[in-house]
Image (cartoon, rainbow, N blue to C red; front, side):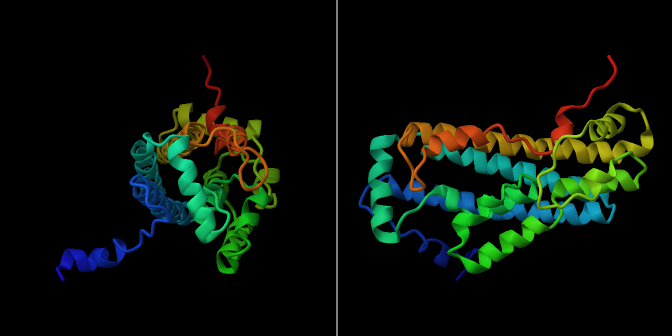
Amino acid sequence: MTAYNSYLKADVLHTLQQPVTDLEGERSFLVVCQVQELYFGLIATELRFAAQHLRAGETPAAAAALRRAADHFAGVNASWKSLEWMTVGDFLPIKTGLGSVHGKSSSLQSWKYREVVFLLGIRPHALADPVASMPDEHSALLTTLREPSLYDDALALLSRRGLSIPDSVLNRDPQEEHDSHPEVARAWTAVFYGGDDELVDLRFCGEALMKVAEGYAEYKHLHLVATRRSFGHRPGYYGASGLDWLARTAIEVPFPELWSMHPEA
């Protein structure tokens, strides 16, 4: 075996697609879903690197990890192009075959996607519930939920650098989602528009956080569009319209104060 194929485990990789129908299009659906799962794992890894660097005050390394995560979001978002051909008539037979072979399923069961959401600081506890049948992964998700989010680490760094972050923000239970706070918005405004050269590295981190948030928002939108085209308002396996659920959550935006800064006119 060549070094390239040995390194990639390509012989294994190309055996991991096991279709459940004889439809020509199923393989593209299966491969794209697998690619997205790999991207979610990659994004989660980068977000953890960024959080580690923020805790250590290593802002250039944190910004670099965040930029990589944003680039990975660009990759996962581009993968939706490979499924633009799929309409309801293409997808429903695959969904039926999947259910008959593997049981009830939904892309919303993705464990790695949930990890990314929790790391970003979006923390509805029920998001972990559909993974309960995978004890190790479920336990890991709950651990992530109990730990500070990436944004918590960013705000803690701002506080250590002398910016005013309320104790109610710094000391809240990390399992609870952070609500936008005007004093935090003022801190980010000082970072971006205060003219203090000593804070430029924090601005670079803030800009990289915004790119990550935009990548996440774009993923949510593209998932919504793909679901509308291939599944419509049909009820999902959890009894409600998957399209309605995606539409409600499409407005989620991580790092809220970065979108509510108020520089002087």
